[in-house]
View 1 (cartoon, rainbow, N blue to C red):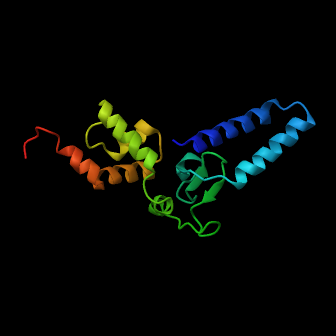
View 2: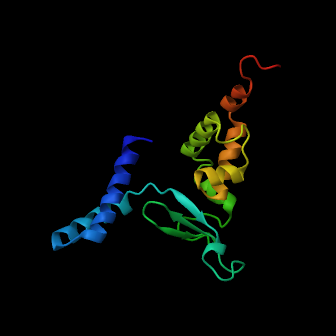
View 3: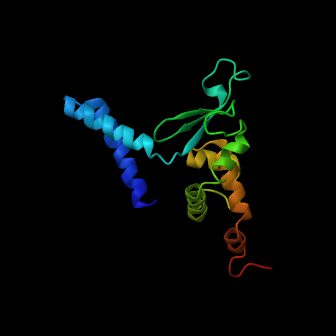
Length: 159
């Protein structure tokens, strides 16, 4: 994680504290300016919200995307807004596939012995607490990267 990411998370936390504890007009104005800046410059990190988590009848409701930072919501049932097609595969494709941070976290858990050498998408989803689409993308990235294939041929392993 870069320093910029850490700084941004700290700014989001500061905005949240101001939203709850602001006691003067100056505090409220500061919070509004900070919120406008953060929303305007947010590098969205989307989480998938399946329709079954919020709708009484998931068969008629679209899946949603929500940014974990600014909480912006996109409706995957339409092509409007940012033009993201309404499929889960398109969600991951629009984000450029697996998130590098997810892949690195999975590799760390494998090295630590907390995940098997070839973890399932469900195991990745539970370990990282991420959406199934991103978990599948991380699993696929692990099985397709050269470093993963090279790591499988450990020293002393039979060929």
